[in-house]
Image (cartoon, rainbow, N blue to C red; front, top):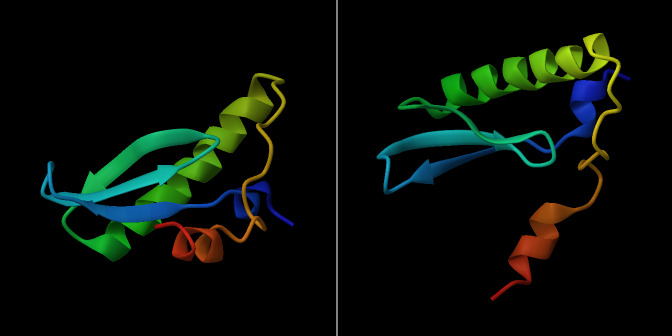
Length: 79
């Protein structure tokens, strides 16, 4: 399976910036932003792929995967 699927991708609204912000915890934070949520997610997916390629080109180990950790349900129990 492609390495980019092993990382959680988050798109959230920023009141401060008045736009959607995309990040990929473990690889980078605040990687892209824009007014269209779907477009920000598409750009985020591209950035994740490009970041992984750079790690591999530089011969660096990738950070630990963040997918499969059931973050959504863990966030529901916070509060």
